[in-house]
Length: 75
Image (cartoon, rainbow, N blue to C red; front, side, top):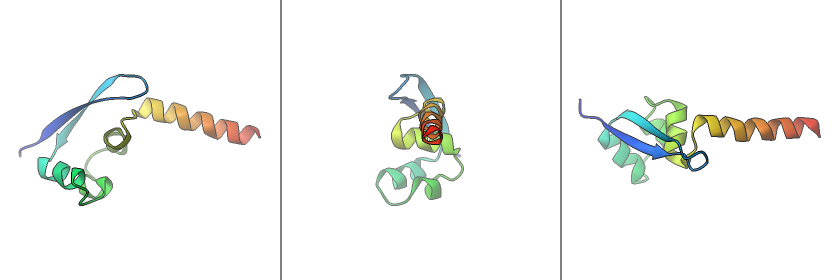
């Protein structure tokens, strides 16, 4: 099977991550706005899909949203 990989740099920590085993036809469908990433590439992890969507790695995403949950609970 022909697959591709993407090197994506997190826009917050600048770490480069590799998303592997992407089917090129699925990537084109999503990239061209013909389907939602969770439907077109359901075989990728949610973390990899988020990285592709927002360029935010899982560690940074969890840091940002854990902090906001704690702040809301303290109010």
